[in-house]
Length: 454
Figure 1: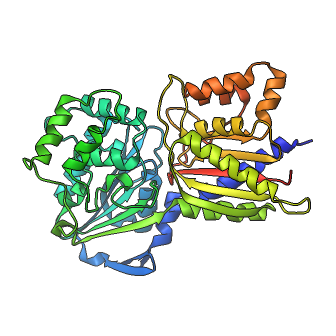
Figure 2 (figure 1 turned 120 degrees about the horizontal axis):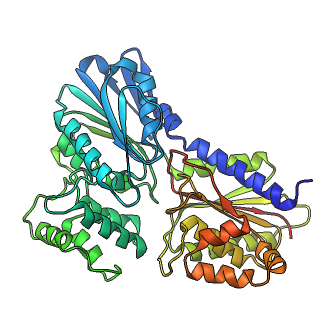
Figure 3 (figure 1 turned 180 degrees about the horizontal axis):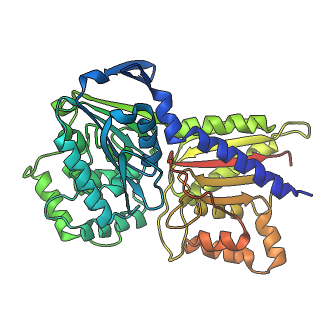
C-alpha cells in the first residue's frame, strides 16, 4: 500500500513534470515561429513579424545554453534544407540529435577551453554573415559560461578563477553578468555587433528573475545597459573571497577609463535588424504546474515567479507560508498546492556538496521538523542543481523527526550539514534527493508545497 509520503512524492513529481513540459525549449520555439510557404512567421508578446525566406541567400543557426540543442533541432525541423550551416554550444551531456547544426559541448558553470574554442567558432560564423543572410540564434540559461570569448590579455584561467569566486560569494546573476559582458567578445550585444549588417532573429528561454533580455545568457543580441565601471564595482564591493586576477582588474580599469570600446548600447545601429523573442519563462512553468495540481485535486496558489535571495532563508519563508495556509484550512477543505519560482543564491561557508535547491530542501526539512501534512519539493528546471547529479530535493514535514527516531543524531546532522553547505550528502542519506537527469531547458527553479488540513 502506498504511504502518505509516497503519495505526496508522486503528486509532487507529476506537478514538476508538468512544469518542465511547459518549459520544453523545442515546443517553445514552435509556439512562436511557424512556416507558411516561404514565409517565416514570428509571434511575440501579441505582435507578429515575418521573414520572406526567398529574400535570403543563406540561413545560419547558432546559439548556446543548456537547451540550445533541442531549440536548434526545432528550427532544423521547421526549415529543413533551408539551413545552410549552424553551431550551438551545450553543457556536457546536454547534446541531442541534429543534422545540419553542429554541436560542441563545454563546461558550466565554470567555463573551460572547449567553450572558449567553440565561442570563437560562433563569432567567426557571425562575422561571415552578410546583409543577404539570416541568423537565427537560440539561447537558454548557461550560455554565458559556455561562451567565454576572452578579451585580449585575459586568460581562461583568469576567468575560471573569477567565476568560481563569484559563485562562492553568492553574487547574483546581474552582478556576475555585468562582469562577464565586459570580459567577452560574445556577450553584452557583441554577437549582434559581430553579425551586423546581417539580420538576426534571437529565440530566448529566460532563466533570470524579471526576464530581462539583457541579463539572459548575458544578452549576446541585446543592448547592454551596464558599463566597465559597473563591472569594476562588483569586484571592488568586498564580497569576493579572493583578490580578482590582476589581468581582469587591469582590463576593467582600462575600460572604465575609456581606453577600450564599450559594449553596444541602446540605439546602436547594430541592433536595427535584430529581433529578440522570449519563448519560455518560469511563469509558464508555474502556470502549467498549477494546472496539473488542480487536476490532481489540489487548490493551486502561485505565490511568486520572482523568488530570490539566500536559499535557506527563502526555504524558511516558504515553509512558514505553508504552515500559515494550513492553519486556515478546515477539515473539509481541499488540500492546497503552493507554488513559487525564481532563483536563489547560496553563500558558501562550508566545504560540502549541494546546490541552491538542495539547500532549500534541507532548510525546509529542518523548518518542518515538528509539523505534519506538508510535502515540499525544490527543483532546478535544468535538472542540474549545483555541481551534483541531483535536480533538487524533497522536504516532507516531520521527516526529520522520523529520521531522528530511527537514528539518534540525525537532527543534529541535518543542522551541521546546512552549516557546511553539505545538503547533497544529507539528502542522499535521507532518501530525499530528486534526480531528473538533464532536462535540456532552464527556466530557473520551482518550489512546490502540498498542504493538507492538519
